[in-house]
Image 1: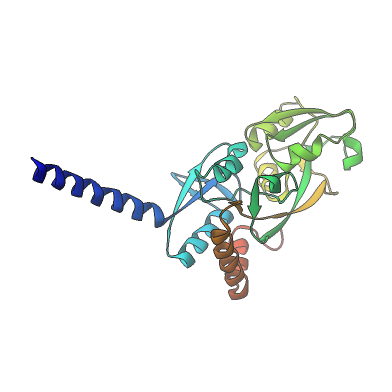
Image 2: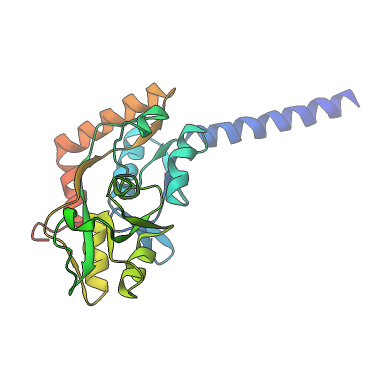
Length: 243
């Protein structure tokens, strides 16, 4: 009987070691795949700039990239609770977010822009005063729009839901990141992007506060990607210079 128990214990230990090794060989990326061209669905795959950057980082580390798609406002929570190793979802570095997580060195510069209908009288951020504005929940557009005087904010789980509401006349404008804005405007007749940007910001990868080893590895990988030209190659694949 003791021999059988020992054998069972040995088998369980082997399975435990295999599971542990598998976990250590993975790099789990939390994202919200509703943000083209940074992350979006193409058939049954999630693709985009952030995905390819994280894949290149995983390759540098000798790990398998595992993508977890979730609501945008759950991405940072997943990182600081340890459910994901890193978060990449067009995340902007902000002081508020830095209270809970660390950020890698920036890998892209972006802008929050304003989408309106072609016949709208909104021509600059100043014209948003007192307007009904759509934002994606938890984004910097959501955060910064709170400072607009007398504005009424409508929060949506996905950016395209805000754009649909604009097309249907339910709101006056949408504040969202520049590159997704270009995609949404190209897909919806009668919309345009206001010339003057709402804000400018930088994207980086979110990593847990206590995981400085991973932060250093990610920063080293990003540095290599920049120096080799691979980072520019990934961005250029999705964003043409004349856009």
